[in-house]
Each structure stands twice: as C-alpha cells, then as structure tokens.
Image (tube, rainbow, N blue to C red; front, side, top):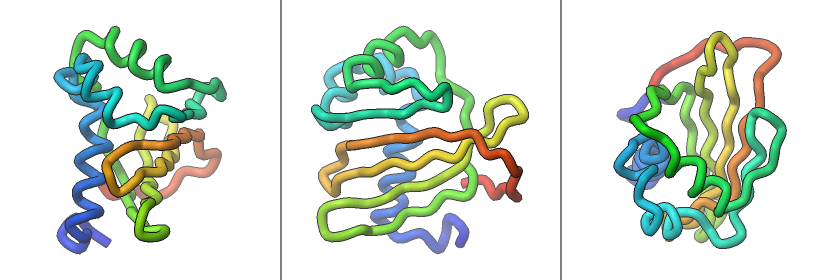
Length: 125
C-alpha cells in the first residue's frame, strides 16, 4: 500500500505520529498532554518504560526537529474506538519497528519500539 491508498483516517494518524518529530509540537506541553492518554505507556527501543510525564519532559528538552522518516506505515482500525498504527524508523543502521495504539479522539494510549534483528525492505511514507 502506498500513501495514495491510505484512508483519510490512516493519513490523520500518520500526521499525528509525525507531529512527535516536530519541535513546535515537542515543546508544547499542553498539546502533548492532550495527545497522550493519562495512562500512556511507552516501551522504548532501549527497553525502558516511559510514562506520559517522562515523554513530555524528554520531548520538551529537544532543541530541534527530529529528522526521522517513517517507512512501511500501516493503520488498522481495531474497532470503532481504537486504531493500531505500525511503521519502521531508522536509528543509525538499525531498523526500529514501532507500534502505537490510538483512540479515534487522537490520543495515543501506548507506543512500543523494538529493534529488528532481520532487516526488511523499506518504503518511505
């Protein structure tokens, strides 16, 4: 599937994910607080767990946009309330598989990043 084949809702979630790479969003604590569920949890590529407060603090410490590209993006509606978002980013030579659970209201509930041990072919979104 390419970008032109994504539904409007899938494109909305692609944009929401990309927002977390933009300094203007990362520095906006109020907006981040709205976008991250109160019970948000992240399992980072480091294997560490991060809460909503951790992420808001860490993103707020950024000083520039994060030059991250999204590859192999997919969005799947799980039910009328939740969407599963999956994609790959690069960290140096490593491919990082990412999965996020979003509510239709635009609040991220969970995010996980895991290093792939076998590289896959990448298609940028």
